[in-house]
Image (cartoon, rainbow, N blue to C red):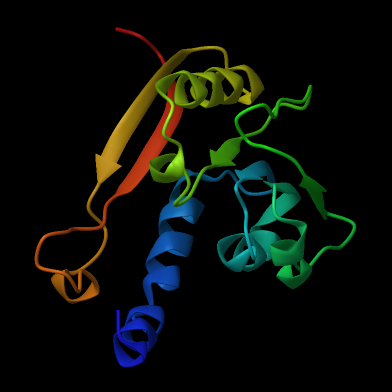
Length: 154
């Protein structure tokens, strides 16, 4: 990818779409876990809307961009193994699953997410097309958001 193409991709305002999507699923004052938080670009934007955020990433050097405060902590860890005892209203796994090549590791992430979500109902992954066509710069790709949540089984 050319530098100009990368700049266009970074300046496409996709973060605003991501923030609005996440806010639509987040109760006011909710607790969020961001698995694979990286530089916390999305997570930093959520700070005003939550009571607590925990960001997990295996690359410590990326997390220096996180706006850590009393409501936001970061931990170095591998999301394929990460699990804690806290219950979260929302768990983010943005732009990470596609890099995990082992199906068993993906299944373990989903199982751990299920166990750490606040409600005790079913688990659903939903594909959401929130991005306009101009934000899909390559002819052979399209960006989608995926939402996984516990729901009542019917």
